[in-house]
Image (cartoon, rainbow, N blue to C red; front, side, top):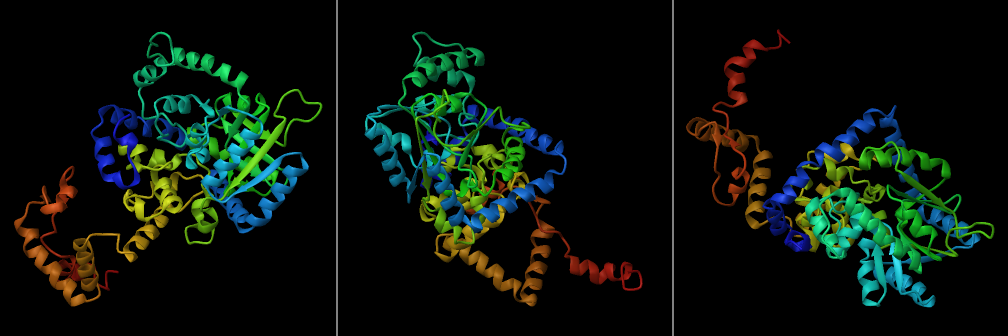
Length: 479
């Protein structure tokens, strides 16, 4: 596993440099905007009234969070009425304990899992492994990175950082003979290998894309058939859901189905959309005999009462990652946490602590591409600024040099005479003596000019031009 794949939160700067120097990673990331990002834009352009639909989705999420306690109670009541079981987990450790308790009560030592960022968030696989329970990821990308002992690098495409040659090398460890770097043969091998796990697993573990309070239905969306096998073949199904995934009514679901696939992969609709309402009925031939839903808090209720409440609108589509110029240069592992990209720069500090993730709120150019791509219009740049503000107030936001420089700048902006003198001095010195572009700034400011030139001040201020020429050309009589 490469250095950037092992990166922890406090190693963000080092991990970013390693990612920028990785030629294979750069090659893979360079295609991201041309594939998922381009498909995203094209899919929404072809959707009539897509803007109104996105605003509607945001309004539904806002409404759901406003009455979250009521909706969760309604969801739990309906699931129990259908014969299912509901568990409440305050944090990731409690959620893992609940899963282990269910499995151990049935004597289960092997489980299959479908793709779930929530189980990644609580490090469920590690807990199962420590308890002697074999857990096998059945999504192709997740299966590959599990064998490689890595974390997902993208919300939707967990192995997007790997080349087909690297994937073939990883899968060959499970094969009696080396596998060729051909996608069709690699997927055929994985499919055959995973079938035996579906047939012998005692439980299937999934995440939840949406949960409908009105009917007690959980919704799982995927592009591979593994999710349906995970939820129907094993006798026990355990679903782990972040508490913000609940929506009020079934009629709200189509709004999200129309935007999720378009935002994630540019499809009109994902290949598999499964609506699961309780365990198997007496007359049904497939489905689990037992269904358990674990509703996870893990800091969400704290976020709900904060100015960053809107981060809970996220539907985990990955659109902001595809649009972000920072993510598209360093990939997902450099962020250190489970969630990468712009939304990860918000969620990871909120879930795991801002102090140990102090670099993440600064991992953005604040260009707004993430908010423009987001299907529920989360104001990610605004939330990053709020996190930066918290860092500054706690004394972690900048070095003493930066605080001194910004303090001087603020002092000057509050005094017109000082601002006027400073701009006069800059134009009469750097503006007239320096070249048009500064190719190397001194000291640590060199980082600004390492890959680009820095514009020098203009040789004449606007106020000077206005006093000499502008007022005569554009005076009140010409206005």
